[in-house]
Image (tube, rainbow, N blue to C red; front, top):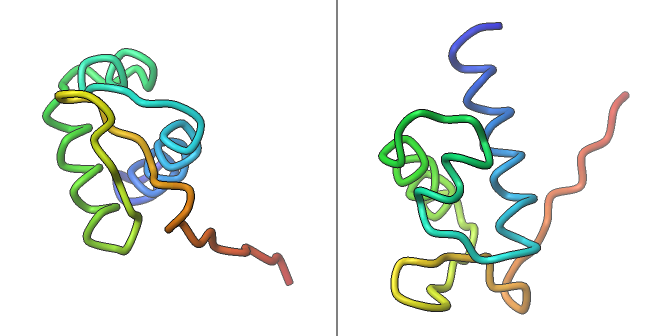
Amino acid sequence: MSKGLARAERLRQLEKKYLYGAFNDEEMAAAMGVESRITIYKDRQLLLKNGVPFVETERGRWKIDRQKYVSELRVNA
């Protein structure tokens, strides 16, 4: 699996997890099997840049603001 494809899949998984709960970067890294919390931080920043509305629930714990979230509809041709 290419690095770009692996990251794209990880971003989709992160988006799903953040929809249903709040996580700090260390917790999410453990849940995703990623060695560094910095990777999760960078991925969350990329999602934020691409319009995913994050909200900090407690100091350092993040989730997606479901009231502002518009999900993508993926259709296979």
